[in-house]
Image (cartoon, rainbow, N blue to C red; front, side):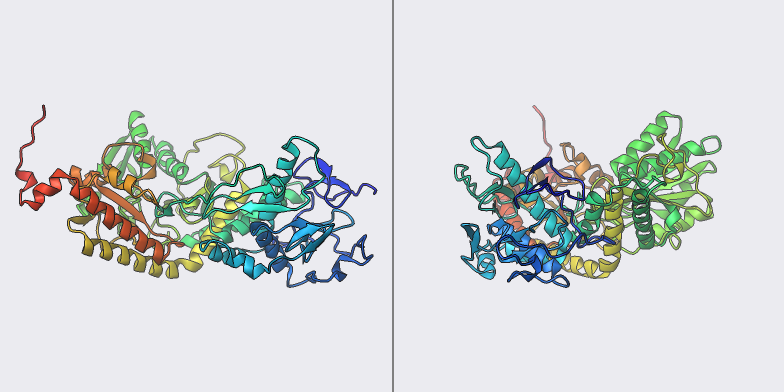
Length: 605
C-alpha cells in the first residue's frame, strides 16, 4: 500500500503501523476533550474485508455524543486484558487520520483476523479487585483525554517491549495488550504473547493520610492539563504565531482562576515554581527593595522552614528580624505583634494555617494592625488557599504565597499575590527575559499553570462541601482514638484550627516506632521538609510541648479523597499499635504503678 502521510507530529519514530501502512507510530492526535480542537478527517474509510466505511461496521459507536464512551471503553478494555487490533466490536473514534483503517478494540482474543467475545465487559469488570471498581467508574467520569492517553501510553510501551525483545520482530502485537493490575499499583503494559515474563503479584500500597505534604492530582485538573501537554505546546511568550497565542490565552485564564479564589485582580498574580519561591520573593524582595529606609522584619517562630531560612539569610546581610513567640495554643499574641513593630519595619510575615499543627492565625486582625502602621503584610497561605475562605482585600493582605500541589494540582508550580494599589515593590531574585512583569523571569510552564488554575477553580466550587466532609472525618478520627486510648494530647488550638490537619501526641510511645508500625498507612511526624531530622519538631517546641511528647507526635492529614473506611482503618491500626508499644515500654509500666515520672531524677552514665 502507498505511504499515508500523517498530519501531526509523531510520538515515536516511524515504524510499521498495525493497519498495514508505514506511519509515525502514535501520530494520530487526540481531539475529543480538547478545547477548540478540530476534528481531523472523519470521513468513512473503506474496510478491506467488507468494502464498507468504518461508520457502517456493526458494533461501532456513531459519531456524536458517544465519543467519550468509546474512548473509555477502550481504556477499560486495555485495563481488563482485552485485545486491541484493527477489527472488533469496539470502535475508537476521534483519534485522527492515520490511513485507510481505524483503531478497533475487541472484547475477545483475535482468531484469524477476527475477534471473538469471550466474556461481557460487565463480567470482566466485576472480576477486578474490589478497589478497582470505583476507580474505573471515576475514570469514566474523567473525560476522553485522560482515558485515551492511558491507552496510547500502554500501546506505546507494548510496542517498545516487542521491538526490544530478541528474535524476529512482529509488525504489531497480534493479540493486543494485557495489563497486570495490582491493587493501587502502577500499571505495566506487556504484550500478551510474552509468556516468559513471570507475572508479578498485586502490589499493595499504604493508605495515604499525609495531605499536608502533598495531595493527589484531581482528575479534573489532569483533564484540563492534557491538551497543553500534547497539542497546545507553544511558548506563551511567543507573540508572532497561533501557538504562542493559544498558550498565552490559557495562561491568562489560569491567572484569572487563581485571582478569583482569593478575591484579587488577575494582574496581581505572578506565577512561580511553588510556595517556597513565593516566600523567598516576598521576604527577600520586599526587604531588599526598601533596605535604604527600612531594615526590620517580623515573623513567628512557627513559620515554614523556607521563611525562617530567608529571614536568617537577611540577618547575614545586616537586617534585623524579630521572631515572635506563640502561645501554647499556637496563636500569636496580637499585642506582642503591635509592640514589635518599629518605625523601620518593612514587612510582617505570618503563616495562615500551620503545616504541622493546623492552627489558623487571626489573619484579618494582623492585616488591620499592619495596615494602620503602614507595614506590608505577607502570609504563607499554602495550607489555606482553597480550603478556607480568603479575601486579600478584606483581610488587608499585601503579599500571599500559593502552592498548586497542596490543593490537588500539579507539583512544581505556584503563585504569589502582590498588591498593586497601594503598590508593593519587590526586587526580583533572578534575571532573565522579564516575564511576569519583571518579577519572576523565565518561561511560564503552560500545562502547570493551567493545572494550578483548574485546581483553584475546582477548590472554589468544592470548598464548602469539602470542609464539611473533612470536619466530619476529622471529628470521627479524634473521638475514636481518644475514647480508646488514654494520655493522648491534641497539639494546637482545637477551636482556631483547620480540621484536615490533626497533630496528636501519644504519651510513652516513640513517634518513629509508631510510624514504622503503621507501615500500611502513610503518615508523618511533622513537616515533610524536615522529616529527615531526628530532632523533635521546632513547631511543637515553640508551643511549649514537652520533649518526650514532641517525640511521640503523629500528624494525620485528611483530604478531598479520604474515605470513612480509610479513617476507621487508620484508627483501628493506631489503637492496636499504641497499645502494643506501650506494653513494651518501661515508662508506661511505671505510670501504671502510680509513679510520677516528673519526680524522678534521671542520671546519665
